[in-house]
Image (cartoon, rainbow, N blue to C red; front, side, top):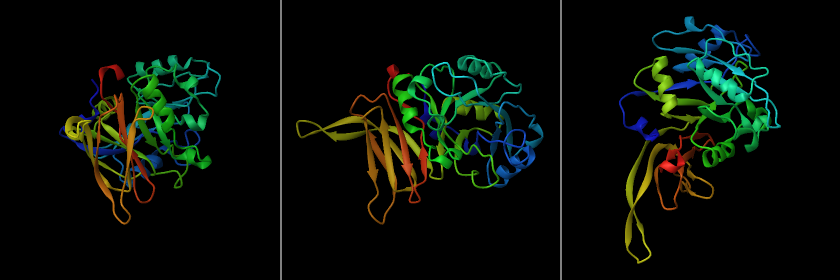
Length: 310
């Protein structure tokens, strides 16, 4: 079973990275070298370059303290009625001729190179469940894309929940999708827990869901434990609960499938740093969103609670 909570138990450290950005090799405003330098100078540990339909050799931009990863953004046609897909390919080294490919063929081509696929900004694309449900083999969907906030369509949380509920497990990634030099940079990233800063370690942690996505707030710990809740006979019963500890935030939202969940709000003038959610309603999964005093959000990966949800 997928165990995203292992990230909070195992040895290692958290690495900050962005998996979606562009350079002058496509429609970005910074050269490849300058794009990597900007993220390194901003305190990032790794960056994936994802120019449109191009793959560049970025090995010269890596050293022991910073990991440069090659990638691309491809755009296969949509046979289900909507606009073309935008799919980030992490860790590919050869261009994928996607112009007439079925989207699942394009995703398979990414995987054949040892890469991973991320479905980009479905809200911005106008994609519906009809467009997304037939896709297979991708690792994640962009839950937030900062560039897409230029038209107010940066958040794709409901798309993610529909996929989790009706299709199956996938991770949620927050990205910059940086094209410019400042306005769309350093606003959303992933925090990946890995034993070391290497391509193999980062990829494996992404595959296992050992990361969270954020605009600033931090998940400091997550675990399953037991808690007591009232029962129908005025006594108590012991049930499993998801418990979290965070940086100071104003809201903690536990999101189960459909109507299941709970929102916890800080009292006026105070902040929250922990909360728990008893599992009472047959939840397939629970993911957590936190919101700080500036309105910045972070998203955990979904914790799957039974084999039927996998």
